[in-house]
Length: 118
Image 1: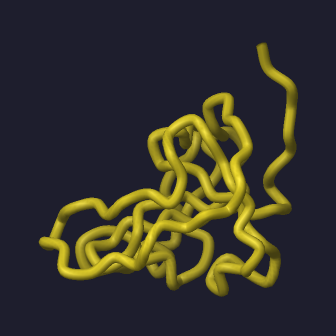
Image 2 (image 1 turned 180 degrees about the vertical axis):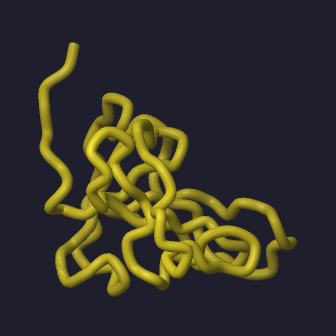
């Protein structure tokens, strides 16, 4: 579901405010890395989530339920998991990309497995 990534310590960016509509906020993690958020993102469920930069998300597609895709300009992630695995159709994460939010993909811990890469 992602490009090869390097784990980093959780160090979230400051809150976003005052952006123009239809612009992306900063991502919590740089491209090429992932970080585990120790606090659950409530719409994603009770489990902690793995946070990746949206540019690293591959083989993901929007949820088929339109109620999961709400937001002002893009997706606010408040409707629960809004990303599906493009291969099997399972709920795998939450895209957060609205004008008042950061710009992250939070993969559900139940959907993530780590595999070595070259």
